[in-house]
Image 1 (spheres, rainbow, N blue to C red):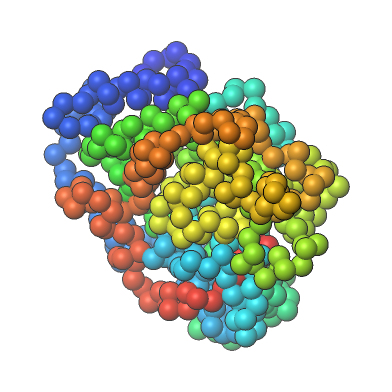
Image 2 (cartoon, rainbow, N blue to C red):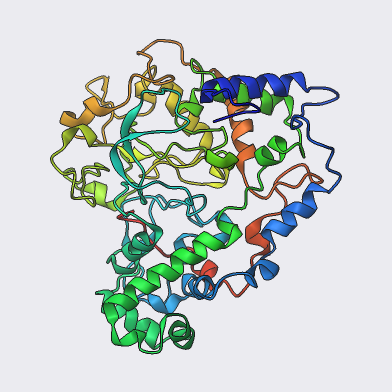
Length: 459
């Protein structure tokens, strides 16, 4: 990115300057003030309310996006008639799962468990198209090339529109038999008239196109409604000069960026993107992390069931390409502290455990993996032939048994303090995330009461 001049600065250099600027600006507290920026006397809370208040913003949605909003919360689009998109992607939980289940329940009777944890639908706006050989802007290694982009955890959907089709048709989720069934549900449902107004009076005479239009409407809602990209975290407030990091948060921020400590920023990019858009906290790339197998997923009772991410079972075009087996897309860390399940298989329920796993995975494998005949079976959720794909090159996962971990307990607490600054809904007056987009998004979002239902088996 270009910063303050025509001189090109690499992302790590930008971060170093940013941290230095933060430290330099300390005075009576920990603060960041934008260079040469006039003092903004507008209360931060007022700006946050302007971003997240649903009734005023809803008036500015296009007709297609307004239709998509109604379809998003419409339970009649599921075979059970009790599940909507919002059942799994809860507005009250940053469009992520509404409970602590590793996988959600769906199907005709809401009794079919999935195999993957539900991801958040926030901050997907700048997701690039999938590529196997792509440069990752903002990554620590300027030479990095590898899989990048696409929607869902294995990147097989090229757009939000294609992504929307997956839960509508999956038997473990909304469980519609085929696209025609979905179109019939819309035709016979409460939004048929609006659907005709948006897509044409004869839209239901062309079921294939009508099904694509359902996805287009859902994609428009996610693209246009600010609740999917509010940028109202404390981190954003600090970067704009409207808030201050605490001393603990600032230390965590430094550890987050330190390439020999947390090294989180090498994958979770924390510098502005093209055009100065806010930091995405993901590089949209893929990695094999070797997370433990989760016995809470019913499918895992079958020892032959394996989820290999890029090379199957849901993505089929990369089957047989062994070097990609076990790789899943790096999610954004925005709102990560609001989550109750982590990683693609929901194996962890504590953010502290997630950070500890990164730094102790190989220094203390017995803590994370089953022990057989006195030896930890590391990376046990992958077949032995694919365990060589697990990342050992990048800190903090470059350690060996009995090496000291990259972070100690105090440093883990400091990183956690920084990660909590990435949650949306920060209130400067309250000193924390008090104003949430989910609390002000009204509009009859009926899907929230069905929060225990849903599934994300193929995402």
